[in-house]
Length: 326
Image 1 (cartoon, helix red, strand yellow):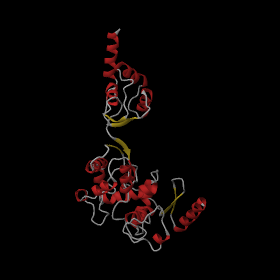
Image 2 (cartoon, rainbow, N blue to C red):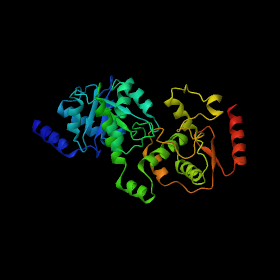
Image 3 (cartoon, one colour):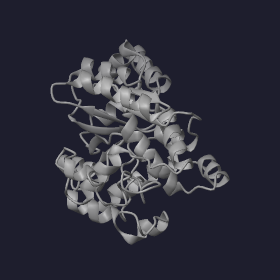
Image 4 (cartoon, rainbow, N blue to C red):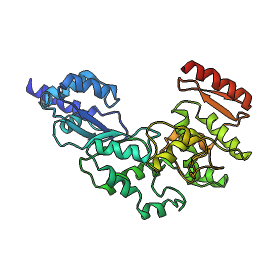
């Protein structure tokens, strides 16, 4: 009987592999038992067989040995190896998701809140000249890595080194910016910095919806005809840089337009640099904007927009949806 159990166990650990093709992060939380952990492994598409995983845990003696912590599961791990990792107690750090459209100050606050790195240390690190030189960031920009800090899910240790955090994010960014993207930019006679700048505005204006291509098209058309972009998020970013933003745009910021190179109500063309860190969808939408005859758009309040060709149409749309808000 013991021989049969041993054979079954050996068969299980040799034939059952995880589904992930890359490293994935997984947390065992307080109060989690084997059933909860197994179900979440399935939900997160790391394993695909509830019964086999539980049986492997039982035969290996790991059923009650899972330890609270954050773990990294290598690609194609066996069920037995996953159980050993989750029972090791060797915490791999804190899993943190940086949302698309976060600016560098948002990221700094999030990292500090999770005890990964202080906000000041993060801002100092992303302002180092070595990074600015590496990515050819223009001297008239905010002189930080704004726009290059790719929004994604990361695993960091508590009290990480600033350099480690920033270089991890840049490594992810470098993987996103493929040779095809760089070739496309060269063919359009544009720089990566210009792409990131437009993409950051598109990201903030769209709220992550499927209108990104059209919004990018509107701004591209405005720029082509010499019209001001007049993007609210650029004004907000200008105010943030000057510690002037408290969550509200006030009359004094609008009349006359706030004098900042980042405020596209004040200047023509794009700002001197990104105003946030765009995700991949915004990057691709800005790389290939949707051709359009629209010049205006206004939010409907549900995350989508009404697009207009003329200022008269736009003003009517603004009145319609402003009235709905009241």
